[in-house]
Length: 324
Image 1 (tube, rainbow, N blue to C red):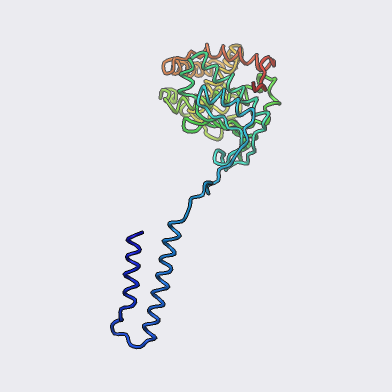
Image 2: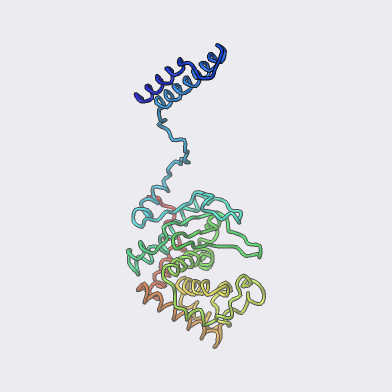
């Protein structure tokens, strides 16, 4: 400020010095007025800059939410032990703008959080150890209330993104399927394990030989159309969706195997016939070896754990609403 004051004094002094090549009192007075106005603006500007105080409240506004008992439960059961965020409030930036979606109902989100924890996270804890789950399970689970409907008449049950996030849709229908093992598997349990398989594959890829078994038979989005929507077992695919691509085939093989009983699997092999069962067995061997050699996980033990847990969920033995 001292330097600025000296400069101002010098400028004022120069105002009283006769201007060269100027004649008449009018020109001198006009110049004086212009210079005085400039100096006034300059001094006011510096004064304003020196007296500005920062506001205590940021101009950047962040949405504030009231914590619910569910939030505190998630903190204890997801964040603290696993550093996983279970997002049940709707967020545009986590949603796919290509679909019309709605938020998850609070009550259904509570049930789904219990199911994911008990039927997936803790099942892997039991078989592979908590360090495996902490290392590989995605750090965000985002739920929406409705399925994501596509133009071909199908709808998306879930997605996996970049090894870090799983989207689970259709949360608001959960209570309709809770007491049916088949429905719970089809719409939720298989989806959870299917998407987690994608996460594992995005971290460590599966052997290339898997892609070659039925490499020429994948049909992309035509999997839901005739003739691909029937007799897929005989062609060596465990589900119609497995015909989409080798990545979906691998995830379907693992999730369908661990989420269903041994008797159900043997029934599928019988329906597949000699050729179909041979192809499916070859695929399953690669999936099993991948999990055992890469992550030290025995899929048969994992299936036993899941079948035991599934009975407890479907029978109502497990309280899926408690937030204690």
